[in-house]
Length: 152
Image (cartoon, rainbow, N blue to C red; front, side, top):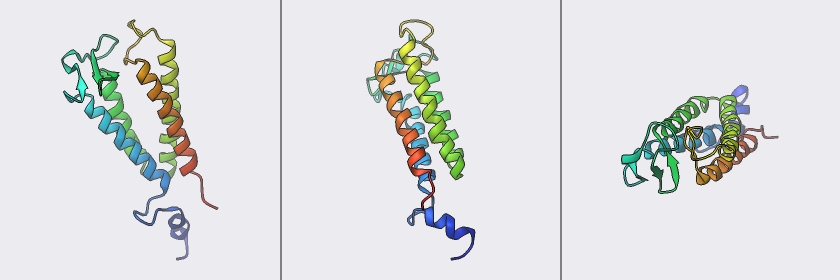
């Protein structure tokens, strides 16, 4: 094949025709949508009767571990929608993974700095969330850098 398609096909996965960075971004986005939705499901999220819109007083815990609120779940859902939209292009997918990873590193720092038992803990976050945010930040940035670079 000759022309622009030859170059993009060389970087695409033969199974679905999409470049790895787009596949990675779409996968991460779907995971955010799933986690956001599961934050509202009784049984998967314990204490859904104590789910609050925002703040440290929310008594709901996704998988019994990660403190969540309606706002926290909505952020995950919006992040997932944004990721799917951005995954439509290579540059958008890279932006979602690297930029989103940076956002999660900032959330990790927020979790370290905020007193978990005060109104400043708006999302809310706990220690388990902090470790997850660190892993997500590093993982998303790594995916963006490793899958988003052109092949030689």
